[in-house]
Length: 104
Image 1 (cartoon, rainbow, N blue to C red):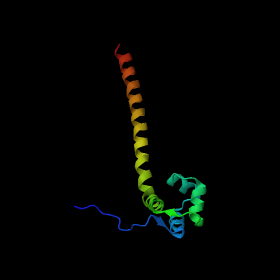
Image 2: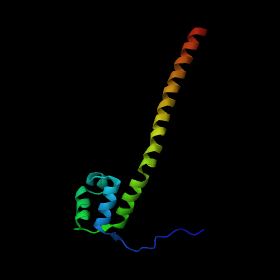
Image 3: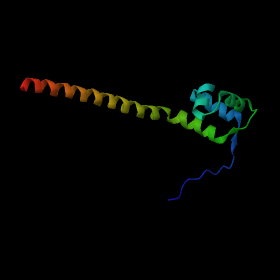
Image 4: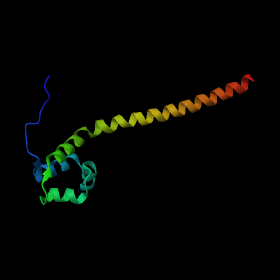
């Protein structure tokens, strides 16, 4: 099976495309900067057209908005699961100590 390749060789996208993806995802300029690991001034330059917006940033914003719920829902149960396991282990240790006291 062959890999899917991106056919477009464009390294940049239009500022209007980036702005539309950002607004449809519901991201502010600051949150977009955090997602792209860039300064908010850079994002404002991309949006105003002062600097060309890289195509990877557009893809990243689209993917983040599309899969945001799935990504963050996966992290939540794991945190709760480890918390409950820790509480369960502590409760088991207390029960074991109480049982040892009753036996002796």
